[in-house]
Image (cartoon, rainbow, N blue to C red; front, side):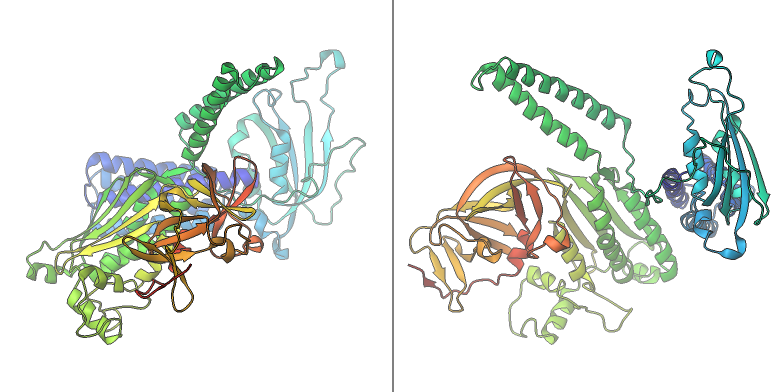
Length: 627
């Protein structure tokens, strides 16, 4: 089996394991017969798949899981929490065996061990209709080559019929090669499990010093082509058939629309002709729909992320001696795969905070008049181009008196300074801020929240914390559904163009005389009715020249750090752009989010508004006007 195909099967096995894990977690809450049957079927499928792929250790582990689940569904064994924990540990072993052992590829990684190197003679004959059934002999031979080094190979054509009797679609050739490998005979045979009814296979170990038969003229080498190494693991996304069908239909419509324009151009129809205008409009509409369909294929539900968090809660609650119920809502809400991957660590940190510092022990909950079992809510809801994620618990909540006490001790606020609840909550995001009296005995919130907030801001999102003492805590994260495509406002700075996300733009202002002012330290501000805001020149920050040092347009952008005015020469256009990451050697500034190709073919840099605003301090009341 080729390494690419093996990687695909490995990904499929890991997906099956995730399904089994989620089903086992459900046994804690509802061990009904239907659910037990579902879990048993999942374990049986995994056992069959691992056996078919030659993963003997994983297959044995899956067999033990299947046996225990069979006893549970037949009533011979009780469905207890300890039993579910044991089964989950078995899933962990299975996952490690699949990840570390690979799928019929691990043998190729062992060829470096000289003590186990052997020579195996492989003789392969395919059924005559193999090509009609899309069975590729070279693919099978390349799979064998992945296990080691091909010492020699030859093709036996003695079964070829006379030319007038030859069927061009039939397979008459027999292949023979000698492979130097550390893989066992069983490992090699497992490569052909899927096609064993369509081939004749003979595997025989030969002496290391034995000489294979000389290859006659015209033989083709079955070794891997020079320059082609084993492909790296593939990152895959499961895509529904409906989405693929929709994209195929749109591609067909796009082809028709393109043909229409080509025909009109062949007739020399002027651009002002109504037919050309309609055809161009159809082309633009289809291009937009294709882009949307393609981006939808990158979306993945939050199901797997929430399942991992649910498993984490179960394991940690047992360690902490707390009874915790996880309430999951909106698990089918979809996010771009890259966004979902980057959100897992922040969400896990918030869940850990809720477990360690938020939820009380059963005895403490009884004393507070609460149920012994604590509750953690994980929810997701999709909005207009955004997704709202919530981590909420019904534990101790936010002890703002304790937060204020620590803030005073750290010098963040003074003892007599009046501080609002919102401002106190913001202190929780300071690096290293904690209300813990000692490590491991926290009564408030805040440890690590600065890291969570930074990660969310880097995604272009926002984070909010709410809670009251004794009434639990709620942390809300709002993140964009995708980072790849965004609506951008194209701005000109001298001869260069930059882009800011339209969602971050609040207002466009053409500064009047005296509206710009300078602080005593030299920083500029823009005077507005609601007060001064920092005025930045992105062109100068990025090393671009500007045409209008005193004129231009001020673009007011909103970020978690506040409002900032960007002084540019001109607003060029409003476009939907495809964001491209820049190689580190091309990053001229940490203020750049990426690059985009505009409709006119030019490349523009996309500003990271959050980083830009966070570097600028707030203006002081006393300012001097700039003439």
